[in-house]
Length: 106
Image (cartoon, rainbow, N blue to C red; front, side, top):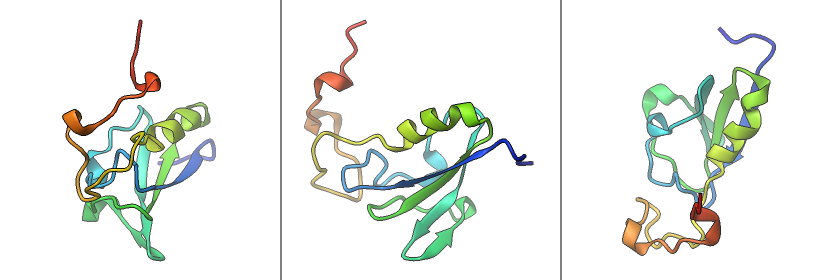
């Protein structure tokens, strides 16, 4: 059950999203965050239909704890530093050019 202490997140899916071509149910969201569906061409598509994300979609998700909303938003906004040449599936690891932001020097 969703209480009043939740935050709704709406994130548009750009062409270089890491989630283009990924099934909505396959998104790995932070704990206590749920995907409610997506909006495509003015229609709401529920997760039970397990749609594949495409550029132009808007992901609808909820953070059950408002403190997790920024983490959820950052998670859903992940992109590649270059546009994918195939928008139906993510690029192979060998095709992705990593930027300094993608490398952890721990």
